[in-house]
Length: 475
Image 1 (cartoon, helix red, strand yellow):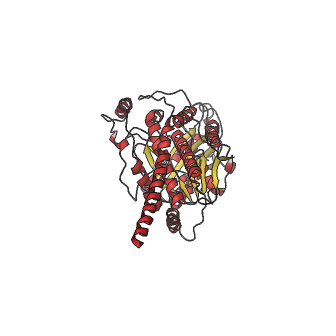
Image 2 (cartoon, helix red, strand yellow):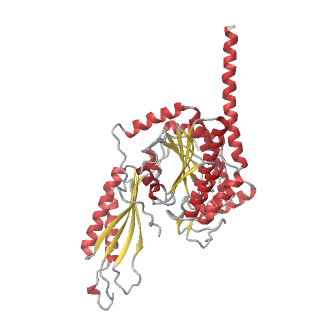
Image 3 (cartoon, rainbow, N blue to C red):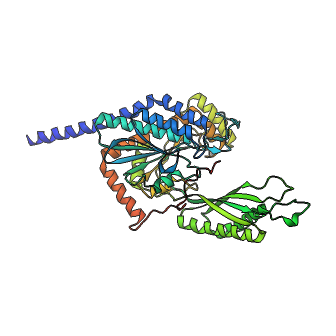
């Protein structure tokens, strides 16, 4: 009798586990049927190609999509008109899914395998049209699963503008919008499928503005004081400084205003700087030296200099507990296969990248799990990762071998290649969120790791200080 009871109990547990798995599978299968719907949303945002803090239509579209599905919307959070939070459910746990939707200036491109501008100001060269849409799709899928299973808790979507240099998530973190969140999930478009522990550099960016005295460059040059000379002197000193910073550091700049005519000594010039490193403390040190170079340049050229910190982001804080969970889900879901037409498109893109043909097997496969990864970009997700346990991954939305911030990335992101990779991301986010709701041990273990990595006395301090959101940085 005792053995029979044990057998019945085991059968019950197996039945419950199988039922939960079937429910999870059905949610993912349902997402597959909605690919056309979400593909259309992504393409609307791709065509809008709105830059940081100017994404009014893109933000509104995602807000409306989530509102139609029963989410409560909080608009204009953190004093940012295009930032929002969409929420469904109540109580704990609170699982957040991050979404982005800003485009990059100067990268307008049609959905063609050769470089051809769409005659627009910007382009989605980092795939944020896919990012925001997939994350919205996942939030909606999780909400439907919660309804059907009577699952308690809260699913939140964070509409995060201006990741490309505007740092909206920093302001959102500073305002405490993530303080009650248990776990934050994010992803990013890419050229392969990978869920290893990612890295990202801390970054401080600033615009240095030099003010001089205008004069006729030929008739009265002695009366002028060139603001452009100040910019060039600063750049020369910073370029010499490169020899004397840690080799992992990155410093880059563009002259955003160098005057208007060669025969006029310019009285205003501006240079836009980024400084990066794996450690935010090293970044602070490097940035302070850049400021000194600007001050010295102004002194030596008889000009004056003022600077404005535009953005500052933390490095990413890894969480291996969550990373392994995401990797397992991504592996289970798998990558994408190309149609003959997509393969033809991909081969032409590959030729532009110096390859004989596209290695489309990389779009189908999942990269091996690694606990350490190197990267040289930056993201404002870094700040979120120091406030709440955070995990991310990437999927193959571009032709393998494509770099972010390229016309090739814009082109593929406007095709079914990007759409397929986007749906892999939506399913991976959905599966991971369901696992977290169903198994609180993941959350507990991830939280312990999070606290250990931050340190006992850690206090979050934004690198950009108390400045208001830089809403005009793309104007």
